[in-house]
Image (cartoon, rainbow, N blue to C red; front, side, top):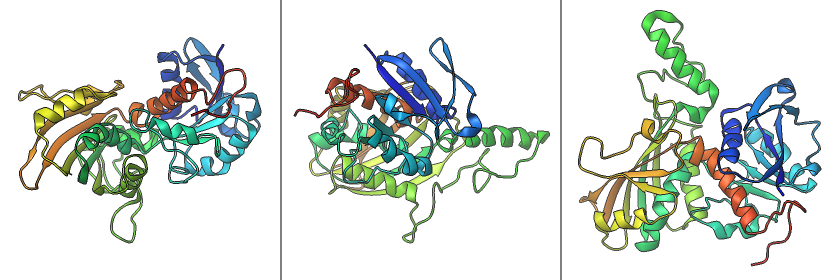
Length: 348
C-alpha cells in the first residue's frame, strides 16, 4: 500500500526533481498529483513512466492526499501550507516560510531525525536552505566528536539555486558574450557569466544578507545555538552544485586524519580527499549524486584547534528535493504518517 502524494510547484526545477527522486528511492506512492498555479494547469510533467497533467492549486482538494511536498516559493507557502496542514496531510515545505517557526521542525534526517516528533504540531515540516543542508551534514558528526565553537563559511552557489530563470540567464549571457545576444542582467543584479556575485538574497541592516543569516539561524536550530557562525554567500557561474569553504574552531584538538575517519562513518557523507589532481570534488562531479562530499581536510594553523575543509553537494538534490523525500521516508519509518490514515500521533 502506498501514499497519496501531491507535489506543489511541479513545473519548477525542484518540483520535477522531487518527483524524480520519489521514483528513484522507491517511496511507496499509490497516487501522484502534480500541482501548479492556474496558468500551468494542464502542463504535462513526468513521474516514472507516467505523464501527469498539472492540476490547479486553488481548486485541488488536499484532504484527498496523505503527503504534500511544497516547492512553490515562500509567498505561496505562507498562503497555503497551514491551510493544507489543517486539511489533513503533512506538508514538507521547501521554502523559508516556516523554518524558524518554533512549532515547525526543521529537519535534515542525518542530523536531527528526532525533531520529527514535532511534525504533528502544525502538520508542517520545513526543509532547510540548500547551503545549510550540506553544511550541517558535514558539521554535525565533527561537532559530536569535538564541539564546534566558531565556524567561518564562504559559499559558491550555483545559478540553479535561483531557479530556471537563473540557469537561463547564465546560458544566455554566456552566448551573448560571444556576440549572440543581450548580456544585460535580468535575474541577477550583475552579470553572472564569467563573473561571481558576492550577494544572494536581500541586504540586512548589519551588512549581511538574509541568505547568510539563514545559514546561521538554521544551523543553530538543528545543531547547537551556541556555535558562532559568520557567512559570506557568493553566486558563481555554475549550473548545478553548491560548494563551501569551511573553517571550524573546535574546543579540543582534532587532527585531519581523525576528521576523515569521523566523516567516512557519517551518514550521507562521502570523503574524497587525496593530495593529487583528482583528489577533491567539484560541483560538476557532484551533480546528480545524493552525497555531501568533503575534500581538502587540513589544519588551520591561524586558530587554536582549527580545521578547514571543502564541502560540495548537488543543491537540487540534497539541498532541496532529496532532503524533502528523505523527510518523507523518515515520517513513514517513524509512523508519523501511514498510507491508510494519512497521519497519526507519533509514539516516542
